Length: 204
Image 1 (cartoon, helix red, strand yellow):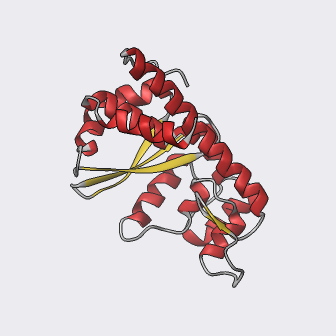
Image 2 (tube, one colour):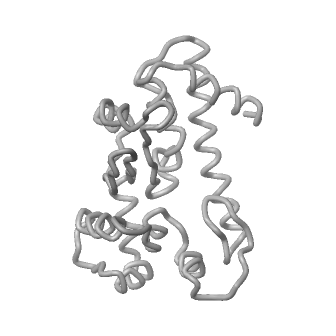
């Protein structure tokens, strides 16, 4: 899919009714996690513009069931709703990798904690600021999380889904994989819009 086709498809999505709009835009933004390429994605629904905040509240259960994905509500300001989307097994494996959980010790996470307890602790810490350890939940390599925290003076090599300080080539391949997942969603959406046949079974 070309950049022009991507832009055209996103414009088409913007003209859809609320349910279709929420389904398609959310699926597009969290596609790497839906596809199992990323342990989690974070998304904020706002009352501004199309009011995705209310749409999410109305259609969330149907959306989660359709895409076989889980959602954890991180923060609700009344005007915005920040949600962590994840696949349970993938996120559990990411958090409890030896190197990751050892790093997370300094923030209060422990090996014996259940995934839900880890998410609740993240939510508690997110209340006042965006905690650095969220990078681990989102699948960012530990070395890059540490570097972003200022644990090194190493310069940033590249910037995409995160700031890359180490293993640039590997990171760029991951970025490409995430982009491919998003394009896959847009291609499926474009086909359904052209056929004028919205249904919950977006083939991804």
